[in-house]
Amino acid sequence: MHQWQILSGSLKLGASWFVQRINNMSPDLVLSTLWLFNHTMVMEVLAKAHALNPELRIILGGPEFLGDNNFFLASNPFVESVFRGEGEEMFPQFVKSLGNNRDYLKLQGFCSLDSKGNYIDNGYSKVNSFNSLAYPEKSFFFNWEKPFVQLETSRGCFNKCAFCISGNSRNIDELPVKSLKPRINLMYEKGIREIRILDRTFNANIKRTLELIQLFNEFKGEVEFHTEIHPSFINAKFMEAIETTRHGTMHFEAGIQSLRENVLLKCNRYDKQQETLEGITYLSNLGKHEVHTDLIAGLPDYSFNELIEDLNVLVGIFPGEIQLESLK
Image 1 (cartoon, rainbow, N blue to C red):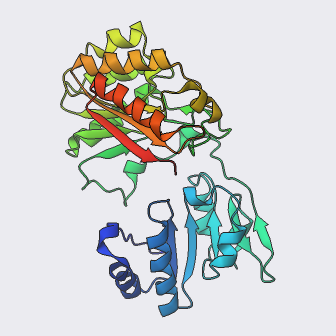
Image 2 (cartoon, one colour; image 1 turned 30 degrees about the horizontal axis):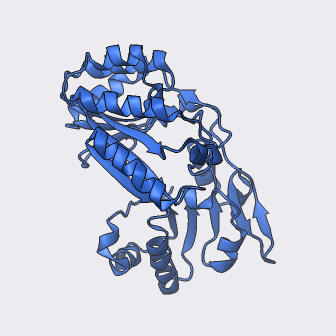
Image 3 (cartoon, rainbow, N blue to C red; image 1 turned 180 degrees about the vertical axis):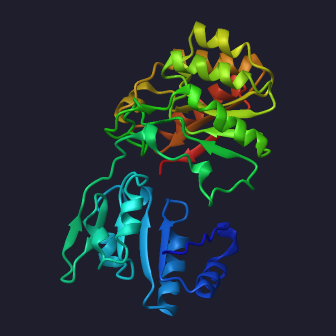
């Protein structure tokens, strides 16, 4: 029987805060997720925690390990292994095999070094039955204290953008819309009034989009649903449906990245500038819902002057937010 504890907090707390708490917990094993934004801090924390307890086992996962992990493991010998891919179906097998002489290292997705320093790569772990996964909110560890929750109603993306971790060869899986209502009801009963839909492109499948909007309308504007949309996919059916929503029902994250078609083509993204601008203009003029747009500096063939020109175009449309970020 394994006893699990969660340690979470803001990067602003500093490494010492986390190290002290890990040391007080005296764990046998630490599991952690690495993203670009927390990589440096997490590694500092874990290196110090391992120095205080050399017997501590450390296993990592997350987007930072989607590529080759040989160099990382060789550079951080205190890390026992890293995991690549989707973990929901694999995790129960992992837990069962923890006490069996590290047999888990044979499971799909794990990368490690053997006793001679040879790199062992078990590929990428994929979920085979997305519709059968247990819902996160049923977990004992689910955090209901945040002002919002995330809801994944589909996984995968039709786009293969080179700058996005969702741009892989994965097929798109979608949960039945009817299965979402009781889950959203539970979130509402727990006092949640902001739900962030994790779907990569909310309006890619217009039939399903219309069903979701109808479901969202049942909450009569009392819950705000954050969605990521493709502005060039906005059509008459979408407009008709969105105009039935109450003020504040939706929050649109409109991924633009660049208004230069040649730049997007370099990134395996296919957009028409005019359609994108028409979509953003429509949403901004609608006046019912917050509209967030973004541009990414550093994309191939995207000059600083072109970025500024695109920014000025968006300012003229006047969406609620314009975010500028650098290519990660």
